[in-house]
Length: 507
Image (tube, rainbow, N blue to C red):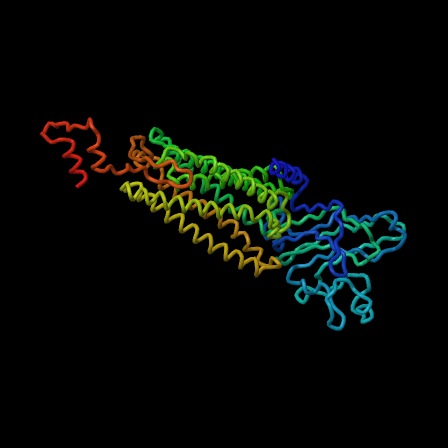
């Protein structure tokens, strides 16, 4: 109940979030060194594209960052003085060293101190910056001050055209310790040549368009086989059908989410929530299907027996942890900053994933042993292929996680933002590839029932709570056989008794 309440709170909170139109709603300044700072946004932006055609109406290939109605407010009791300027500082990440300075090689400061002012390198109370070597017009700095008794100061509207591709950062900074409870309101608009999508997210629109097409192709193959051999379908194939359907909806929703975001500049909260939810349901169901297959469900046993409640509990917990994590990461996401999710949200999903992997391979090992012992060679062959595919997926996943950690540790300032889309895209491709393998192994066909559970006693597995073990008859000693008073040999048509047959079997 507590988890549901937290989820509902996050959903309500996300309704206030918007997209590449960055809204500031009474954002408070935080002390950073000798400055007071509000982060206004960080986005990868491509350079404006010149219009080389005579098309009408002309395209809008301009990249820009526009500051609109940026308003600073202070309380009336702190309005009896004229303040130092509050400045908007916009810079490309490669020019970050041009912001700040130090006197005589001391500690680096953002605000100009008295010592630096005496050296004549800056004006006291203002942000220290120097022109970029590559572009003397950058960084861009705009300021406004409070006059005596003023409670509001408005920054003039500015539109800055982007002529160089890069990761741009905007900060609102002031150096006046007398400005208590100062807040900023208003909005900024960030635009790329292709639309309002931040540069880091822009490739994802094309990627999800491609993935939607890929899921459609997979769906055509699977549903055509399903329709042809619907009489031969067994429960496991119904679960695979559900995963494919969820995947098609997830990819389509993500594409529409990014497409609307790119067109309007405002991220559609409802579409994002639906995309996140469909994706989380798909990942949960996919993991449960793999776990159930590993246990032999629908292939060597008709049900999970006493394990059903444990499987459902694990699936429900994973869904809740993943849903909250994905909502925090995606709903209302504006800036091109990675790693926003808190550690306490990432850890539960990661731990549950590890638990899934351990349980899956433990169950697979037990199922393979039992199939080999019963000499069910057809099912054993398909389970070996399934195990190899899973093992390869886990090895590739571990390798990619190591690469992801390396990538993020070496990209502290998001300078590799143009390649960052590959990281989330990889997990989608890996998931899709594994689903394709499962679809090939268990595709509906005329002979598909060879891989299904048969209720003739030949596929019986013990319904143990923790492991799968074969039901083997206990050996009956010759002493026990002789002790049965009513046992009499029954003559067969060829004159051999049942005792002879049993003897032959024992030999």
